[in-house]
Image (tube, rainbow, N blue to C red; front, side, top):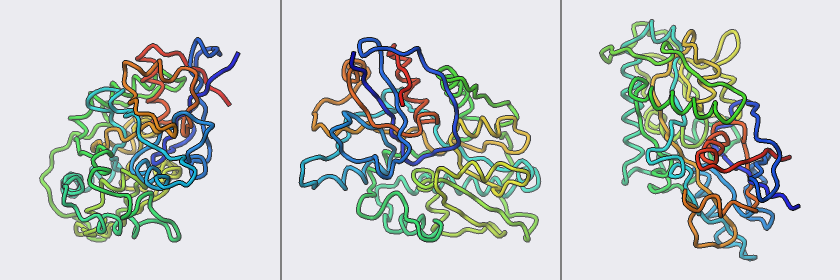
Length: 350
């Protein structure tokens, strides 16, 4: 009996360490969906007769759609669904901002100033009149030498930025949403994600400069939507009275900057499940805020006018193949959560 594969393709974002998970017992095409991970997104996020659907993150989604718009063979990618809408009206807390507890305790005024600047950056980049060239230049200038951002002036627009769902929500204001989301992710895998009360920063210091002018603060963020959320800071190089270094790195490496005996990142942006898994005790790092709230979209190369909704999700996925990456991380786990919430059984394929 023919099986069908559904794979989740999430670029950007955020590959933050392998997280094992279990799935249902193997099902046939009449009984469920098969989820399959793709290990090489750079080569696999292309129109293909092998796939009915793929899932990817903004801003890479728009880049891929634009890149395939004029394919001579007619094979092009189109957006046919919104994973955030399938999850729920307000999306889900996807990327979080964390800081070393030692820095928070030593420099509370700086933390207040920095978080205020991040909030302003989120508002700035969401402005319809934002200077796209300045955004691209700011992110590009903080990438490792020889690499390019996931977006360019040709494919980054105000609407693409809007699709990245960037907004600053403080740790205390987003605590309930993060807690609920972590519980949902735990419900679809064999990893348990949770965070103690100590993980959620609750300080309320007045904004000010650092007390130690010799302080070195290294800030790390993944390329993609997290980097867009910090673009104004990257553009202005506001040093807050100390030596502040911004680093935009591949999503696959981000967790290495908050682990080990002496983590490199004083401040870091992480996917919420990785942050909870690695730092959830609150002993070494605390969460300052959430920065993105879902930026995953479903693509098709079949030129269909039918948009995927909660009402037709099961029908449209049945018997179909969908290209997929980072199945064991936040995007893949979110898809599994959506499938589970809609009563759709799934298995994991090769």
